[in-house]
Image 1 (cartoon, rainbow, N blue to C red):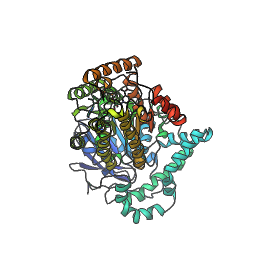
Image 2: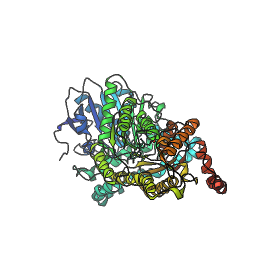
Image 3: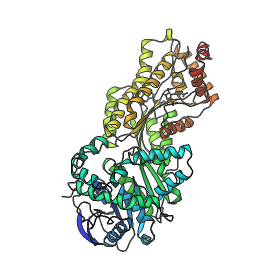
Image 4: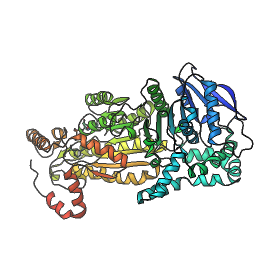
Length: 587
Ligand code: NAD
């Protein structure tokens, strides 16, 4: 039974086996060959292939011994990379005899595709290669050797880290045991394990009923190749086609560090990352299809690098969905632009419709492949619920959420009315709570990780007689971020609290002041605007700190020098900070 509806099937004979090959889409278009991993069959691509078939001639095959392809006899020695390369060439010759093909591999499909893309005899047959979650065994071998020969503490850490993720490879090398496990309890439970641990949605006839046999045969992929190649890696394993590397950040089996020096082996390299676990063909088919389409199209058009975004974090955020609140001005707008520059898809949320629309429009011009404006008041629970439902339905689950919308309120505590308190807490605290609750839940349910950034303030840890309500709201945001960080850590979702100091934005001209009349409020707004302009710290630098915080998964990030200084004082000399808190504000 195939779950690839509408696929045309044929058999290709090669080296004593018969491969089951499925085709979708127009054979006149560029050919994309999808190679599955372990323990899978071609149906792992059933969500990706139809999306690609809208533009390309898509070809999938069951690797020998898997799905409905026959197995070599004997099994031992029947799965060497050399034989797998013969199979690939036989399929490529059958489906696209005159034009090079675009190769896409996941897991072991990628491991073997690295061989295809680096051996001489396939030169001219491969137009591009998209690799996900499967390194070249040769590159891996050199990576290990380098760390063993020059073991700095960092390198030893990297070795141990990858070693801890590779335990199953040793198990697969034991005789008979894996076969018994897969044909017995493991085979039965695998779909549930995938669902529970990897958050692979349980639908679409995947995994197929051939799983126990696929897994038992596939153990020979490891036994026939891993030890031999890691011991004696090829020294000429250079990619002869442009490579797109897609790295899921929460992969239980592979460390990102494996690819640190990949440019040495694949000079025409495009890197992409996304918050996800190992089985991305099942969990992120939309994103993969979009990236493969973009890459193949750019290679066909003579531009081997698909990344159009130029921002310094383009590798990290390209194609990701980022939602920023308070994006109509200041720090929020600069943050939306920084993500757009990195090629992210941006949802700009603000209660100011015009401001949000402008940010979305500029984001598209700067490099966001898509950007939308949403007019929402973050303090409005129902409006936020509607926004969360709309975003999930129309744009997808957010990868990075930036709860940034906020308002300023100055004035002594005794002058601050309950209405003032409500206004500032509703926006600064409840706005963040709604965002975390609604979008954080979607992230957690998707189960593929993500990141939440909350804009707090240096006022969160620096007391002052001038800003009691504002500081209280920001201290709450800081603590909320810390608690949430602890709660979501196990789900691969990072949480960062950003604490800017004085940043030159519009906040000063819209801030309210308690205990003064309208004219005095205006005067103070103007004065503080002048002071902030004099300080002149640009919001772009805060935006940069926000992107860095996501990349490094930092917990608390004081940004300006004064914010950093106050942070140190709050830890080491809190009495001095308390003394400063008593000073009259200069307004
Ligand atoms: P800003 O006034 O330039 O931008 C804030 C944006 O948030 C505006 O576009 C505004 O329309 C929007 N907004 C306000 N209330 C909203 C609501 N209820 N719903 C939706 N959108 C709303 O100010 P900024 O300086 O860029 O501030 C951004 C964040 O940074 C705030 O949380 C602020 O407290 C924090 N912050 C700013 C400074 C600073 O010096 N500028 C320092 C520390 C922290």
